[in-house]
Image 1 (cartoon, protein in one colour):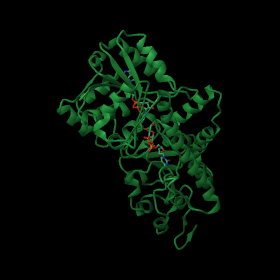
Image 2 (image 1 turned 135 degrees about the vertical axis):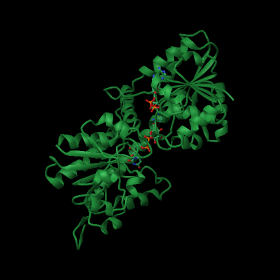
Image 3 (image 1 turned 90 degrees about the horizontal axis):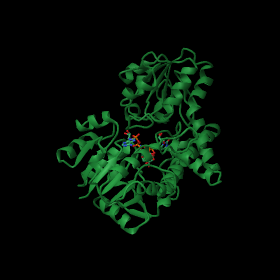
Image 4 (image 1 turned 90 degrees about the vertical axis):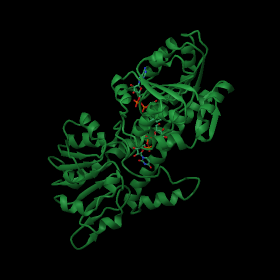
Length: 439
Ligand SMILES: NC(=O)c1ccc[n+]([C@@H]2O[C@H](COP(=O)([O-])OP(=O)(O)OC[C@H]3O[C@@H](n4cnc5c(N)ncnc54)[C@H](O)[C@@H]3O)[C@@H](O)[C@H]2O)c1
Ligand SMILES: O=c1ccn([C@@H]2O[C@H](COP(=O)(O)OP(=O)(O)O[C@H]3O[C@H](CO)[C@@H](O)[C@H](O)[C@H]3O)[C@@H](O)[C@H]2O)c(=O)[nH]1
């Protein structure tokens, strides 16, 4: 059992805190956001993540986790994990303000030798500089390690307990050893390396996954023109073990708090060492195009979207989370509003948050209400609730069932059985008449 402090109670900090407590460590989780800390002390999670709230409560009952805004409570921690945000600046590079603010507070608080473990995604070279920065501000010996986080929202706890790998970057063997001991109960393969390589593994992994998505989205656009079906293409490609099936789901592009910002930060980072990362620039460009694609198709279909009653199904950037950061819904709703459409939206989880983002949108309390009297539906997030919705609902509830599906939720053969006009990504359009199917 180790005494660990985690700085930042966001998606990463909170999941890490709860996960470490659950495997037996004594964890103090610190955040400057008093509202978050108050709600956590009451056992309420400020974010939606499957199984997180009960696990917070269980570890509180076992006295393995405490929440605070007071930095003095990290004084006796042997390990301090840094999990504050690193959002993007206007030029796309990473904003390290929160990292340095937290580092300064840590330096002025520690009373004994400590190891700082950077979980936040930071540009290569940051950990080395941060080490000097903290050590200059405290007489106590400080070690520093990079331990990038690979969890996905929506399956964050599962990823904590059953991740593919743990990467530890450090300058000394003993530092890596200490962090390996901390993770021992997890039985996840551990890779150790130097600080810079660990920092780069995080950016390279996200950039590669984003590349797979933009690649399949480009293939999808070509499929639409040549009459192929991108799902079959992706399945066929994925059977090759060198390619692998994951992250080949065509759709309206990647969003979220990581891929958009980390791809841009890596382009910036490359630029700083006079390397133009042209491949990644294209990946970003393709993604921007992709987010606008369905609205472009809709405009083509209707000529004008002025006063069109549009239903938006799904608002979060992916299912299983209430996170709206860089969600495709932001781009799509903004475009639709500018085109003069009137929007009703529904999301099973993200609506409380979404209300802050979209003051001009009407929110429905369920999918039926969202679809009733709608002229066109657009599926932005592939929640199970939408995937499992009987297709006759669209026929019965909408004026005329016209669906633009940005996540390929439905099987084309099933759609053909209904009077639905159906546009998806990288698959043939279904235009249904009462008696015939014209594709
Ligand atoms: N969200 C993810 O899925 C994910 C996955 C892997 C890596 N990451 C990376 O992890 C980092 C954190 O991401 P996140 O999504 O958890 O961010 P977040 O915005 O959800 O949480 C960050 C938290 O840090 C707190 N904070 C800011 N300054 C602080 C300070 N000085 N002291 C204490 N708390 C402070 C904020 O109040 C906030 O609660 C980022 O670098 C991100 O790129 C995120
Ligand atoms: O085949 C796919 C897979 C994903 N997406 C989209 O890509 C985005 C990101 O999805 P996902 O990677 O599942 O979620 P994140 O929670 O953003 O996780 C990514 O970003 C995290 C933060 O860096 C990393 O820790 C994770 O390893 C990495 O998968 C979402 O908009 C998805 O809709 C697709 O369009 N097609």
